[in-house]
Length: 344
Image (cartoon, rainbow, N blue to C red; front, top):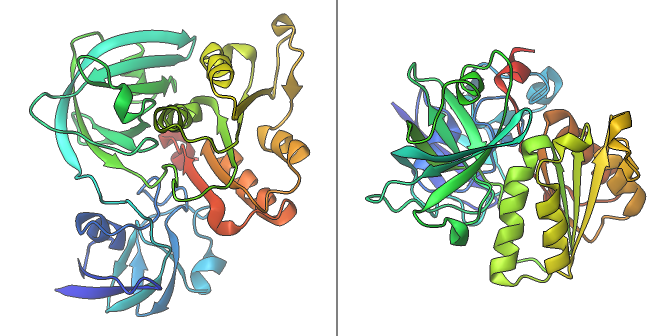
């Protein structure tokens, strides 16, 4: 049995099987809906149910609270229709433009960029034309079928020879995948991947100045966006803020400094929340989103691209819109929700 989903205001329609999440069917049909984790954890796919009835699968209350659900909000990533439905959801231009592919990859190189951060490059198969938007992510498929998501940190023009994607992986002790990366993974290992996924990419039809805000390895897709701007000579003003605990966590600080030197339209502000005495840090401290608010109290004419820890992304969205007048539809985010976050 299938049900018909109609989107407002775009008037796009598509069919969904009774036990299938709405988002899965939209992706299959190349229809752009906003999403991030696809796992009921980040809230990026939150939409409003105007007509019909759905049942939600497992999800986190921070992504969709009982009060929001009572008010008619749904998470399309885990909402399965029980009737035909009308859903109010913001369309995403460009989503679905590139096909989602399952493919093998070969570990080309591994670099320990910080004590708990590895930068790996995975060679793409020569017989598949893998394309993606800068800012999107792939899912690694583990032996038991579990999946782990990581954003590409390089733009498509910068795949190198042989073509490979760059991924920034933070070690989560006890993590099923990251323990492997930091112990047994080696060059030439074969991994299985699927992608691209996600709706975190640069909206190039706008001329607004940009704020890019990252925490930890949320810097990876931000780096890809900057590379995209460099390649396409997009000269919109960009204020980049990167928040980490200590100086050692700014694992590509020199890259960001050089990017700001190469791009007159780009400024770079690192912010440390817990600088160590040995850091001799003279720069900004505190929460990274509060540094943005101090420098740019009026964001009414900006776009914001935020990526990193869920607590940072949620605080930035809440406070930028409430206190800095950022339009709600100009906040684009990729929340890095780990398996540990989900368990908590």
